[in-house]
Length: 153
Image (cartoon, rainbow, N blue to C red):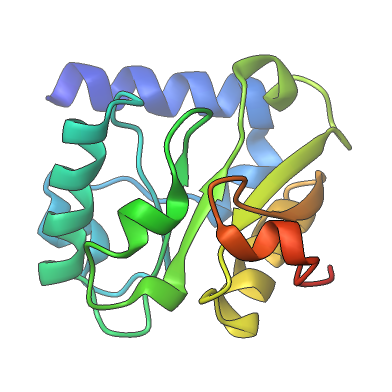
């Protein structure tokens, strides 16, 4: 929706500052948004059905190199990733709106045992360039978490 898009742009400009805006682009369709994307961050409700729908769309339309990052506090990244053809390129962001208003805030980045080092590095670099401190952790639903196989920042 055009009004929602304008509102999102205004909110991001206020929250992140004008200097961060060259790192962000806006599009009117999902296809337009992901056509040349290296990284996508969805803004759909944190509900399984919504996340599966957007992951399915992204998986069909985005180039093979594209990494999917999704803000979620209660869904398993491993489960979402398993519904794509690129489970190694799916990452969770444990993001709360209050964190965005504080520069240098720690942003938890949730990965799985299948997450590629390149995908992890891309997401961490994105948040660092915006002035935040990414903290990588293995998805709590991931069985290897209890075995101590966590990827290092």
